Amino acid sequence: MPAPTATADLKVGDVAGYADIAFEEKQRIVSLVIDDPRFTDYLYGCYECGICVAACPSARFYDFSPRRIAQALARRDVRLVYQQIQEDIWECSQCFSCLRCPRGNNPGGLVTIMREVAVNNGLASAREALEGYSRIIYKIMSTGTQVSPDMLQPDAFPDWGPEVKDVSDNLALWRRALPPETLHTVSTGWDVSDQTLIELYLIWFETGALNMIGEVDKGLHMILEEVMQDRLEEAGIEI
Ligand code: SF4
Ligand code: SF4
Image 1 (cartoon, rainbow, N blue to C red):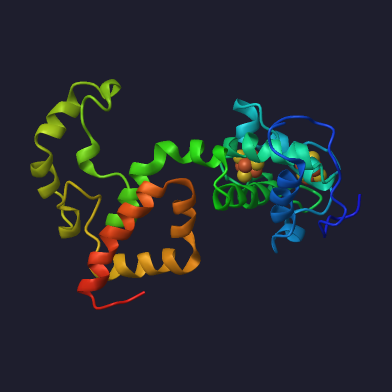
Image 2: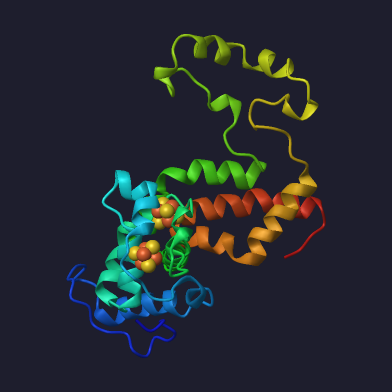
């Protein structure tokens, strides 16, 4: 099977779905995947050997198959690839065990590209998949750390048993008992300096990561901009 290199030979697929979306729009979305500069490095054709499926943890637990992803893209099956972008790709755990493909394919990398296209184009699947992560994204981008100790509340983790109540009631005390000074906080995992936060923000801004968030969650994007604008002004930085 020849390696896919261009979008000119995109074919109409056999699988129906998302009939309310015009074929031209599906073709545009799939073309963005195939035209990505990484694409030709990630897909060289497919033997249908199933080795990637055997290695894939998501294939074990979900109706998901890296082989199906590679096959659909190799066939330029526009309708099926579009359907996979709206459904399948969010089941991948991005572990890259599928890199053991004997054909040199990288199905996990293909999924990465497909996810980026879904987010950059504000597809419904991307919004739904990321809906539950707003709080975590906000935490990471505004504090530089992810889960903070004050999230450790008994009602949030009822299955953790009675000890969690004692920990949450005396959280500040427990945190002060930790040796590194930067861990004596309860609203962040550890203290991150303003300079580091500004550098991170500028990286997210320059690489377009912030715009990606704007595509899937405008409210979160606005809040992040406001929070960081104050820090940038204090540091005398204009962007
Ligand atoms: S990266 Fe995704 S497709 Fe590849 S093995 Fe991991 S879960 Fe499966
Ligand atoms: S391991 Fe590679 S060649 Fe085999 S089915 Fe998966 S993508 Fe195709």
